[in-house]
Length: 270
Ligand SMILES: [Fe+2]
Ligand SMILES: [Fe+2]
Image: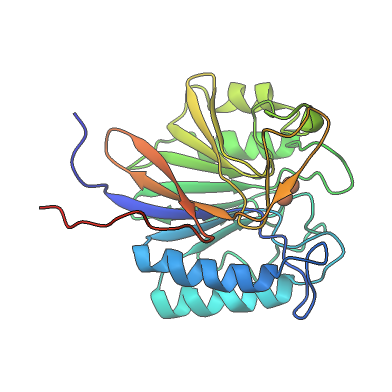
């Protein structure tokens, strides 16, 4: 039986695909405005930490210093960590020292970090992928991860990795997830890792890596229409984030629609 209230609430925001101020993503989408709006809304939910799971910027848009300053402001004001990993659109080492100021340990890549959020350990891993159509973890990173998870944390561990260790639902994205998922599983299968949070696919999908739950958040920018024909990637304007509720016995992942929808009714319960 699950206790009625989560012990911790986290927010995951993935795939912002930011462009420079005044520009539009694919000539139609104001992603910096989407980010500001998204943060204003999700922070009303009182998260203990915010996870940014990669593709902060759109390829060839130089936004990372601005993002670090923007989220840094919230970190200082609210006193909560923003835990950030890079994605395949983020230039190599762009998620560097300006990010993750609350980390308690760091690993082989600049955005390989360990955070302690009230006893929950959150480990971010750089899955590379810049200029490639798949992600991977190096042997050095896997060895580091084994070291970091050698002892269990008080409330267990979450991993954050941009490329999902799951197959894609769309045929057009086949093979673009985390290439060495099995090697990752070998490292964490006997550890206290309770779930893996990913992005990259631009739609929500849940699965497992062995017995470990994997959640792929919808993107904050555009999301793919799963009704599109097999080889077509049709990006839609809806944006999503994820509310991650951590209970002693389980973790739940609830999708948060960031864009408009119509109300049907509202009633007060209890
Ligand atoms: Fe993306
Ligand atoms: Fe990506």
